[in-house]
Length: 145
Image (cartoon, rainbow, N blue to C red; front, side, top):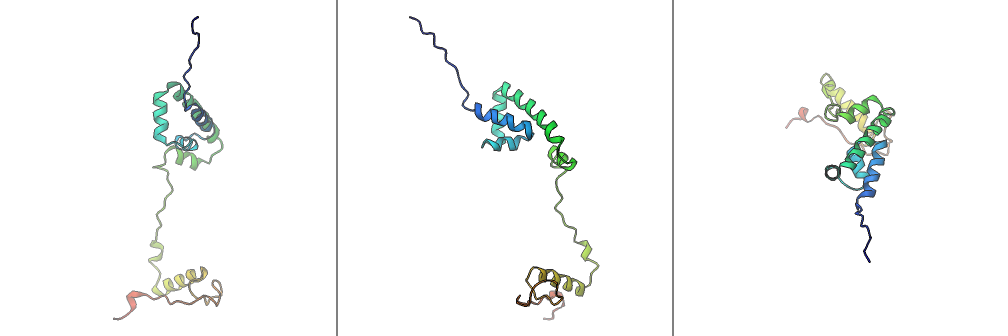
């Protein structure tokens, strides 16, 4: 009697690969797709290099995802996603607007803002209550030694 058993090799990562493909159909971002199955982006790249069929499925799914996601996303989100280095949010704050204020105007502005968050006693009636402990905001450059 001859043995006619056929042995199939099953990729233990097949389920995760299928989940990645499905994810990319909706959200065309490799990093997020990898995180959705608890792997990092480098692992996803390795899997794609090792498995040409998977890599092809990923590319098709990602192009579907770009069409799907792109039709629903705002233009700024599309640009940020396509080129995050160029279109990132700017986090610089321009403080030059305060250069033309006098020391008194700056002190009043600071007290007003601190009063609104309850740090200083606000006498303007807009911010903190009378129970808020008062602190004095001083200009260190105007003090004498």
